[in-house]
Image (cartoon, rainbow, N blue to C red):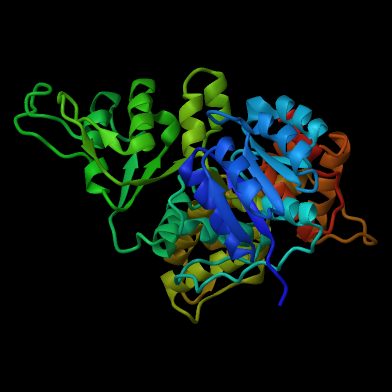
Length: 453
């Protein structure tokens, strides 16, 4: 029987360390994890390690200092670095000192698996199948399937997550899935929309308040942090959280401790936080509206939900699902309706599609949804776009997939093959672009383009 490869994971942040270890074990590796470079050296001396994965910034011996030590005393052991964006230049130096490659935070699990396999000189295992999905979750597009597989991988860990994506892409639906797949499935799943509550009341809503903390506080009140104790908390629109409250949230994430507004007492709660946003937190950091340390504490793993226009294969399956909900299982979309739905860019994403189908079902006289039952706004937009489109050549492939493939190839050519810049130009997440490159069998340069992020 072949001995499984042994990987040592080093990271002072416990959630990050446990998440990496959990994924590696699911992929068939033996894993040892430690919180410091000093302990890593001890483990290396006592065990036969096949691969070392280490964070860059740690107390004591840092990841950068660990690389030359490993190269000198254990030259056969490959080293992968895990680094935040500000450390990329240092990571490149470390690679010259002996590291084989690096990952940027938040860690892309597919990229992690590829790099681990490359470092160990082995083929990658196939994707694990998804468990049965709740009724109403519909997808065909491979990018969406990849997001759901990543969500399933991390659901059982305690790691904090950030779900990104435009409004209407289904961030709360993904939150529900993660909660259902997690070990906290029977514990509270609590939501807080940071944009829906006045800033002056947000701290009280999150952490509670003491009696007399402000005018009208006639009694003490628990906040949702205590309500979510043992369970999971969704902080929706996290970018809208005031800076002063961000500092308090950072403390609660670090050790679970918090103090209600107007109280000098400290309480503790075990809360797994999942944040969601339709904004770029990196941009918010650059403009001084979001704390960088909170970003890296929250963003152990980022799950990016692609816009509906970036997963066109899902438009009709979703529309049929919504139509059967509103008009029954015998209902169907007319051929013209299918064409109109596929031609529309869906700025409001899945929520917009659902509302449009519901509107059409109210206008329909029978079981068939015709184009005229849809919103005039949608029809005008599609007609205007069709009028501007150039005539089609009969010798070309005019499928939606073929058109998307050509758009991606053109963007990569303009960006000299840099996937990060190409994704920004296309208006999609880098991970979504990588999934589509795989789906359309498009060759692109290796991941050294991360240096330009």
